Image (cartoon, rainbow, N blue to C red; front, side):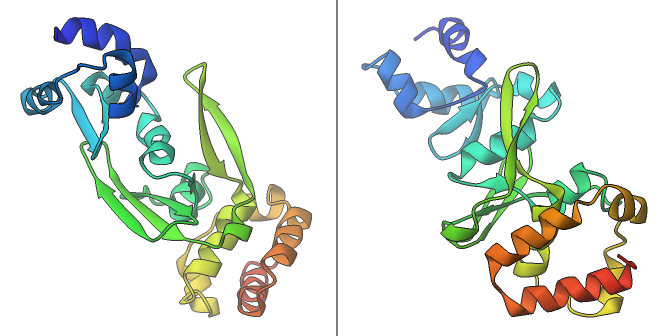
Length: 205
């Protein structure tokens, strides 16, 4: 198999799995993938999932791949809060939630962490469009905040809430309190309700 013919066929997919390769070329030699990866002209995102090194230079594709490395999932927690400018730090991992078991992947793009959440809590995310025609699933700010308080029970004091250094302008001007309370009802979790009250009191919401 000629690499350039392969790349011409697969490049616009951004990432692709081996099933897609075999659907195109049933007799494809899998050793090509190992050889091209070793040469650095192909990048392995996880077992059976690949992309091209050119995508390292394109904004937001590291986030885009998060949804595809582990399905179903959506970006949330610290990554979503950082994306919206609600926390000041640039996060080292791309954090997502999924109804599947907790998982972690590392590749040339990023470290990807997936926290387990109940099937019934897989809501509150939206399709964010970038690069004209690409879509990634990311929590709304309100859901990212609730996911964080739900999955990290250590955020249960005013000091811990202050340590998050949440952007107070966003909290007072842009956070949708009606939506966050609507989401809270769907969690139906007393501990989460208590943590949210502490957060509201800490930031005078």
